[in-house]
Length: 312
Image (tube, rainbow, N blue to C red; front, side, top):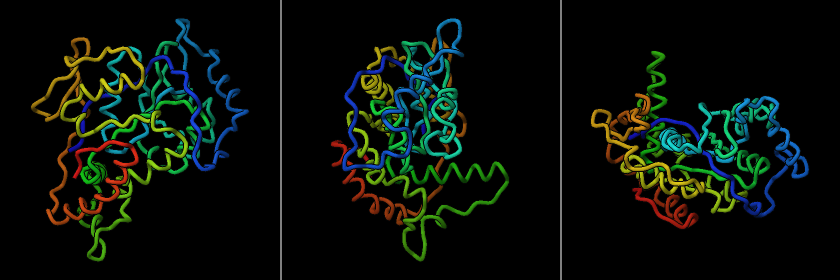
C-alpha cells in the first residue's frame, strides 16, 4: 500500500567530510569541473536576493533521491516537523531533466526555499535514483552532500507505481490497461516494464556507490516508516546530525485513512488523498513470479549495503 504524510525540508550544519572518491574512473565531465565548482557554489551563495532577516536561497545540503512510490513525500513531510529543515515544495528535476540542468546551479538554487544559516535545505526528486546520469551530476555539485534513499518491498513498489499511473489516467477520463497487461508478455514476466526496472535497487545503487561512499547515503525503510514512523525518523535525524526535535507525539494513526498522520504545534495534517490507495488485485501466481524475480537482486542489494529488509 502507498505511504503517508506531508512535506518540507531538511536542515542542520553541513558536516565537514572528506570528498567522496568515485570508484573505477567514473565519468566526471557531466557538469562543472572541480576547479569551476568552488566558484559556482560561491555565486549561488551570494545574498543579493536575501531577505532582510538573513534568510537566503541555498543549494540543498541534502537530497531525497528516491525511490518513486517508496514514501518520499511522507519522509519529506515528517522531516518538515524539524525546525532546522527547509524543504523545496515541489520536485525540481534539476539533475535528470536536460532543460533544467542546462539552466545551471544558480537557477537550481533559486528553486530552493529561503532558509537561515542554521538550517538544512532539502530537495526531493524520486526519479534521481534510477537515472544513470544523476550521480555524477550531484557529485560534481557537492561531493560531500548527504543523500536520503527510501525503499520498500520491490513487488509492492511495482504495484504502487502502476496504481499511480492508473489513477492519473482515470482522472483524465482516459482508459488504462489492467496491470496484468504490463506484467506479462508472451506468457512470461515482462522484465522490460519500467516499473519493474525501478525496483531493481541493486542495479541502481551500484551507480550511486561509484561516486558516493555508503556513509553518505542513508536508506530509510519505507515499509517500517508506514508501520511505525518515529524510529525511522530518529535515524534520519542522527544521520543528518540534527538535534532531536521530532518525537512520538508528532505522529498519530488515522483509522479512517489507514496510515499515520502528523501533529505539529496542535495542528493535524495528513498526506494527500492520492496516498494510500488500494493496489489492484493480482493473481497470487503472478505475484509469486514477481517475488521470485526480485529474490536474487534483493539478495545482492542486501550484501551491497550491509543490511537486510523484510521483503519477499
